Picture 1 (cartoon, rainbow, N blue to C red):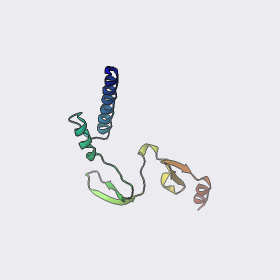
Picture 2: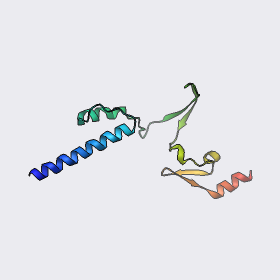
Picture 3: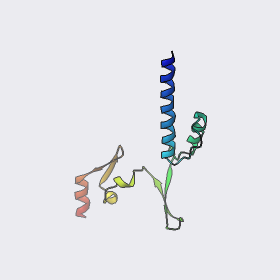
Length: 109
């Protein structure tokens, strides 16, 4: 029985540490590792929910909004191909897929 409790405690401690790391990795400041406190901090995560339309905002160097646009989807900037906005890529499961025929047609124009 003691081994079972030790194993459960170890598992719980790992879950708490992973939960804490996830919150902190998303910019949420964690003051306590108590489960109730961690759950309370989840509301501070910036997340996108299905069925809700979101706007992307472009800011100038001083932080003023200079452009707003409906956000269809999002990806990390580092995965954007240099020519991502030319109209011949589709986003499939978060990956850019090049349509070579469409690229050829658009480049002919």
